[in-house]
Image (cartoon, rainbow, N blue to C red; front, side):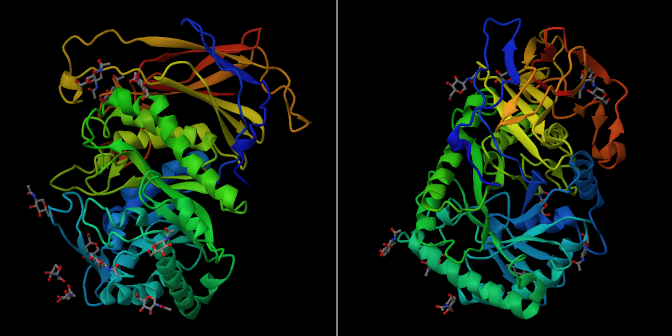
Length: 545
Ligand SMILES: *[C@@H]1O[C@H](CO)[C@@H](O)[C@H](O)[C@H]1NC(C)=O
Ligand SMILES: *[C@@H]1O[C@H](CO)[C@@H](O)[C@H](O)[C@H]1NC(C)=O
Ligand SMILES: *[C@@H]1O[C@H](CO)[C@@H](O)[C@H](O)[C@H]1NC(C)=O
Ligand SMILES: *[C@@H]1O[C@H](CO)[C@@H](O)[C@H](O)[C@H]1NC(C)=O
Ligand SMILES: *[C@@H]1O[C@H](CO)[C@@H](O)[C@H](O)[C@H]1NC(C)=O
Ligand SMILES: *[C@@H]1O[C@H](CO)[C@@H](O)[C@H](O)[C@H]1NC(C)=O
Ligand SMILES: *[C@@H]1O[C@H](CO)[C@@H](O)[C@H](O)[C@H]1NC(C)=O
Ligand SMILES: *[C@@H]1O[C@H](CO)[C@@H](O)[C@H](O)[C@H]1NC(C)=O
Ligand SMILES: *[C@@H]1O[C@H](CO)[C@@H](O)[C@H](O)[C@H]1NC(C)=O
Ligand SMILES: *[C@@H]1O[C@H](CO)[C@@H](O)[C@H](O)[C@H]1NC(C)=O
Ligand SMILES: *[C@@H]1O[C@H](CO)[C@@H](O)[C@H](O)[C@H]1NC(C)=O
């Protein structure tokens, strides 16, 4: 399915959104979007953290698997897992290492992950611990095309990776993480200043030819046209020295082996001045701008190559450098996850891999206990769950953004096979109930929580692409309401989706009913075809038709 928001096809007048108790009527023209891929709610796992997240044959990480199963329960598909990140370009192979990964930290390069890394044969066991998951393994281009030890690692690990990913486990390959930053990386440059798109493409072609030859030799089933391919170029963003469309023009996909155009995105940085929860993450305008800039780079590629593969976010999260405490790990970040993911879907991105790592502030879950972070389900996971619930189980899911007036709110219509199936409203007005918004110490007298009533006018008949889709929502029909809730945008615990908790301490990540949260709510479509729903500040509501 091609990405074609450019044509601004007129969407049928099924739905308009307006704020009843507010001052403004909104939502006018709605443009078409295309179907997302299955497994839209997916993850990227830092290469050096993968053994923590997945475990190994003798110690599989079943907590992680429970969290992935919850998403399958809602969408019908287990998330796709991309294994990669900065550390994939530091990893060398040591055949005699008796465990998965020997990582050495260099605080001058990063406090969050090792920058000197050896992996052993048992690293690849981590690809066998979760049922029905497809993986992308990221090979080392950083050192691989730079040092003889790195090149040897490629030769040694392709056979191990392809064997581990046989039997239906291969998603796509990755070769190099964020090559656009190789010569400028804050963690230390791994290419000279002359590094540019031509140099990248040359090395990429050389490496991927070698990978293909090794796959053919060791895993012939995976070398077939239908199985073999990459997500690329995995750029860190759109504003860096190397540009994806220039790499494309330089022949990145001349071998026609890039199956998904993968780009990475962060809204801003963990230590960037001026970043706040309300103005940066709980701000739909900021999210939309960030996604729009990525879509624009993709359009440049499509204009060069109309046959370019569909776009995904192969690695993304809120704030780069692993997130900021008090922002990326709060309930506010969960609301941001919903807005970002659904907006990305509305702009034609087909799948979103939210990036995870051990001890990362923006992680959806901490897979093991460490001396930095306790094992557990973290607030952003509830955003993944709410997104999955909103998309639902269907083969043809489309998301349309309903333009609203204020920065602090967003709404989406979700269609199953062209029929309106759900409406999501995200009220991103911040609301604190803890001292200094740190999520730890409750305020003795929290302020009154605001609430906004949203009203949607459901059109009767719709025509789209000449097909009469008929009345999709009956007047007087009851509509189910499910909510994403917490005490405030500053909450770091006590979060629920439709009355469920997925916290580790309750049932190791399996859904657990919370007795203190109202569920089973319904609203009614009135005789004028209008449906109203009140949405508290710092919460989201899903209307299920
Ligand atoms: C490889 O692993 C073996 C066994 O642990 C160790 O003795 C050796 O020093 C390692 N080599 C490197 C380069 O780390
Ligand atoms: C498997 O994981 C356990 C727990 O982390 C670890 O102690 C063990 O060394 C691992 N086994 C191998 C072969 O890496
Ligand atoms: C782990 O890596 C460090 C740094 O390269 C090295 O000094 C150490 O010997 C390695 N340990 C093993 C068991 O390979
Ligand atoms: C590909 O790169 C490797 C490692 O840098 C190098 O040894 C090899 O000669 C290159 N292949 C070609 C065809 O130049
Ligand atoms: C290899 O990487 C080092 C930095 O780690 C850099 O100084 C050197 O220029 C690189 N060589 C090539 C050929 O890219
Ligand atoms: C990259 O640099 C090389 C050597 O300076 C030059 O020949 C080539 O045209 C440059 N490529 C691009 C895309 O700028
Ligand atoms: C949201 O972001 C826009 C664009 O950067 C900015 O103009 C606006 O002030 C922000 N709104 C809030 C509530 O922070
Ligand atoms: C935390 O654990 C890491 C390795 O597991 C160790 O290097 C570090 O010193 C520990 N930090 C503290 C504060 O104990
Ligand atoms: C919540 O607390 C944070 C941190 O003190 C503050 O910056 C923010 O403005 C507060 N938000 C609201 C809605 O009061
Ligand atoms: C949320 O608020 C309720 C009641 O106001 C309180 O009982 C509960 O402990 C709070 N939850 C958290 C996680 O602080
Ligand atoms: C419900 O109970 C949980 C667990 O005690 C708590 O964390 C949460 O804040 C409560 N929710 C409300 C709305 O009181």
